[in-house]
Every structure is written in C-alpha cells, then in structure tokens.
Image (cartoon, rainbow, N blue to C red; front, side, top):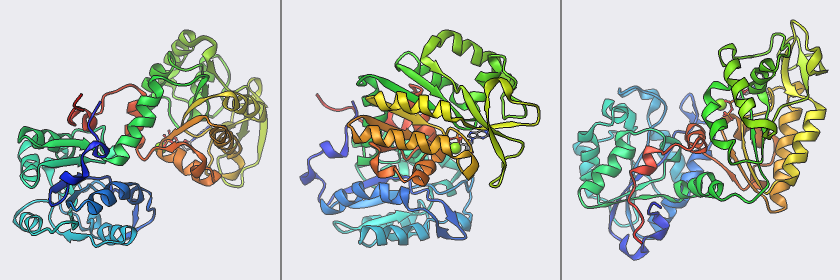
Length: 402
Ligand code: ADP
Ligand code: MG
C-alpha cells in the first residue's frame, strides 16, 4: 500500500511547501476550457492543502506542446478557471522551472497556491530527465501525486519527481483523487463481491486485449459490445459485411474465446446500416444475415435484454467502452440501456466503475454519472490498471509505514 495524503497528520502541513502534480489537462477550444471535469476532480486535494495552511506549488501538463513553449498550450486560462472553482486565488508563473519560479515559490505564504507553466514546455518532462525532477524537488519536501490520468507514464513531474523528493529524504504520497481511483480500480477488483460482470466495448480490440486477458480469470461474465465485438463475430465465422473489424486480430479473438468458454458473452443480434450517419436508416439483424455493404453499429434488442439482465444481477461491474456508435441517435440504444442498467444496479448497492474517455461521455449523455459508484478520470491509466499493470506514477510513491 502507498501512503496517501489523507493518512498524513494535517498539523504537519502548515507552512510546508508542498509540490502537487495534478492532471489539469482540460479540453480547450480557442483558449477556452470546454469541460471542467478534470479541474473539479483536482479540487479536493487542493482544498485540503489550502485549509491545512500548506504552501502549494502546482504542476501539470496541458496538451502536447512537445518540449516547446507553444502559446496555445499555456496553463494560464486554467489558473483562472481553477481559482474560480476553488474560490481561492491561484497565482500563475509563466515558466515551469527557473529563477522566477523559484523566487515565487520561496515567497509563498501559508495557504497560497501557485501554478507553474505547462511541464511539457520542457523536453525533459516526457524524457523523465533527472535534472528537471531535481530542480522541482529542491522546492519542497512533500510531493503529492494526484495526476491519475498521467500515472501510466514515467515523466519528470510524476514518477521522476516522486523519486527525486524521496532521494532527498522527503515523502511522496497519493492525492485524494489518485487514492480514490486506486481504491475503485485496483483494490475493489482484487476482492470483488460476486457476481462480477465486466462490460467491454469501444472502437478497437487491439488496445484492450491485455484488459480482456487480465479480467477473464477474475470475472463471472465478460460482455463484449462495440466494434470490438465484430472481430470476435468474424472469428466465429459470421459475415460482418463492411463493419469495422481488425483482421489482424481475428485469430487472437478466436484464441481468447476458446480460453474463456461461456464466460465471454457476445451479441446475438445487432443494429446495422449501410452508412454511419445521424440520419442513417437502420435495421435489426441476426448475426446470420448481415450482408455485404452493411455495418454493425450497435448491439440489438435481444442482446440488450441479455446484457442488462447480467448487469442487474451483478454485485461488481466494471465497464469500459461503448456498445455502439452512441454519438449518433440511431446507434445509441445499446449504450444508453447498459448505462441505465449499471446505474440501477449501483442504486441497489452494487459497485459500478466506469473507465474510458468516450465511455464517460456516454454516461454523461445517458445522465447517469452521479448514480455510478465511480467514473474514472483516466482513460489510458484506467485501462492499464484493469490490465493489471503497475503504474509508474503510483509505484514511485512512498510505501505506507506499518
Ligand atoms: P473509451 O474511450 O471509452 O475507452 P474507445 O475509445 O475504445 O472507448 O471507443 C469509443 C468509440 O467506439 C466511440 O467513438 C464509438 O463511436 C466507437 N464505436 C463503438 N461501437 C462501434 C461500432 N460498432 N462501429 C464503429 N465504431 C464503434
Ligand atoms: Mg476513446
């Protein structure tokens, strides 16, 4: 177990300079933040530190400026929005590291927050350059990593900084968001209440094969939907028409099915159309009569009934990936029905965890976000955790003293 911010004695935080790596990588359009979700998720840790009288040095990346100071990726608008959400000033320093940053940090008073410029303005960030981590580590002796969304990469401001702070005798701990993500995506799945049902969908099977392999031995059922299902259906010998299929994964899908037996559940019917468009004309097809020129773009009503039946009986549910092209009304029914079923199961006391960027958008569209146990803020990081990988951003933290 890793040490968490929650476990620290609050009294030790007053007057202490605390380095916080958050994931403030909010979607932007023309300098405006289009979605506050990531900023809001970072608030509890910042509140705790401010209320405890810590001096907060906040670090984050934004977009992919690739090691250069690209104005489009400045964190300045984020500092303003974050201040509004916090109801507390957030000073901004226009460089991620250097003399100005160092002097602004040393002038901090108790309870003050300063946000440094985008860490990815520096090539050393993604290269995990030790000199860069060391210059941040020199600013404080406590590092709080709350950037779950960036935890699957070893970068200078994440795993590197944790190591550098610890090398100087300081502590590196999980922030409140990081701890929450780990509690639901890692701990809860180690000893799941049964039945344990996983639902996997989305665009591609290739990015999620490790997740399928890691979940199969643990779950009671693994329900497959989305374009991912098409590759399995092809492996079963069905004609998938013009559907999105990963031909180079068909053999692998066959092997997974053989190993899984009846744990792996595939659609028995589907919604097809000759084009993927918001005004597409659709029909429900059995797996045997998908024809050339047609594309499978959602699971069908019989599959919906079966999948929601499994979900209703489950006590633990992990869901990643939409069941169809939910962004367009003709192909949204499968995803919306599954979202509602998971939310209802949570209402009856089941643990329901959702991961994935598009899946989170689908839950938003279905209006169920507040009824789910947990919606992960990290796409790639949540998939890697589900696949059983050790995340560098987590592994680098101090172990809990026992
Ligand atoms: P997440 O971000 O939740 O991990 P993915 O990125 O893997 O999910 O997949 C989401 C995308 O998959 C959505 O944009 C959706 O339109 C697409 N998708 C789902 N089912 C199909 C399908 N049958 N054919 C084509 N695209 C699909
Ligand atoms: Mg996605």
